[in-house]
Length: 171
Image 1 (tube, rainbow, N blue to C red):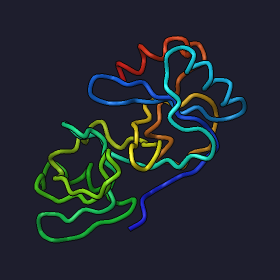
Image 2 (spheres, rainbow, N blue to C red; image 1 turned 30 degrees about the vertical axis):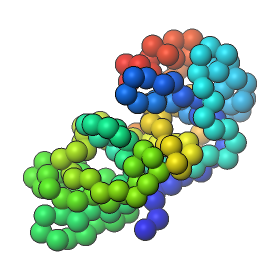
Image 3 (cartoon, rainbow, N blue to C red; image 1 turned 45 degrees about the horizontal axis):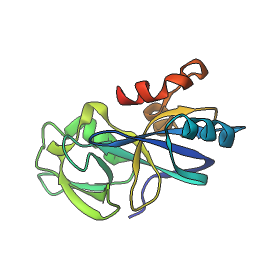
Image 4 (tube, rainbow, N blue to C red; image 1 turned 60 degrees about the horizontal axis):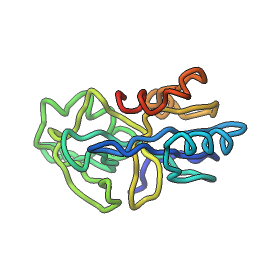
């Protein structure tokens, strides 16, 4: 099953928090200079160049980030692809034992239950290396995103770039 993905040129700068690494996606003209500034200010360069972003969900507990591929609900129906994200909003509370198949934060295939998903905070955009994906809490710069990606990403205005560590900790 193919994951919902989007590719673009940019950089991912991460901030390691107590329970989760959150990151800023830097895109658009001059992304390398902005990423270098964030690294000088305490960020960690996770990836730069041609990036693959995926839609994911936040979990209530460790490993906190999950990229769903398909769902088998409590009556045996299977849902795959983009409709998985619609299913969460419409059915996760009514069918908490539905099995969700996908990729965990270690980049391994895994199965979780719908009750493990923080539906109110999902979907999210996940980036970084396949073996250690990170939650992209903000995007800085301009890039065209497909609708679900655009809705899941929060913009970081230029005037808040110097406050990125405080903003990302509260995201």
